[in-house]
Image 1 (cartoon, rainbow, N blue to C red):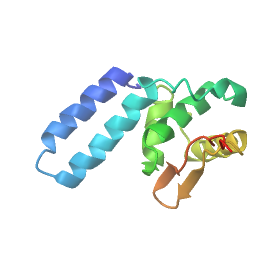
Image 2: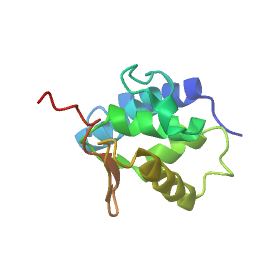
Image 3: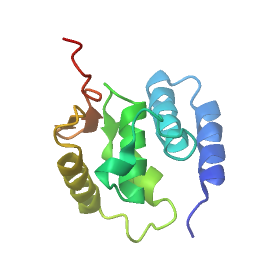
Image 4: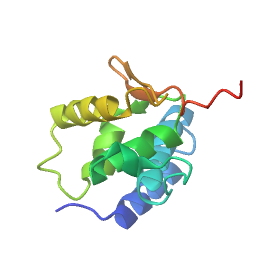
Length: 134
């Protein structure tokens, strides 16, 4: 049985309370909590008009996850948990690679760069290209 986002958040908070004396575990849980909440709570910045890129709902959520942690590595397991919490049977490891590939293609030339940190996860390095004033 899959967990709702609320129950996942509650579970992570309880785990964080138990890990208060283990800084590494606490940080890992904190990062998971950040990814999960931002995938569902943080809206896309209105300046990022994603409609023009024709992203799927999953790609918009993936974009939000990576953008909210810009400059930091987001683990593949955190992405899978955030995107597929309600469909655990569909959350195959390879599906994240495919979604990243499609997202990269759709964002090509926009200034958003998604890097693969081998063995760790993915990271968005830059933001939208700014128009040069001169």
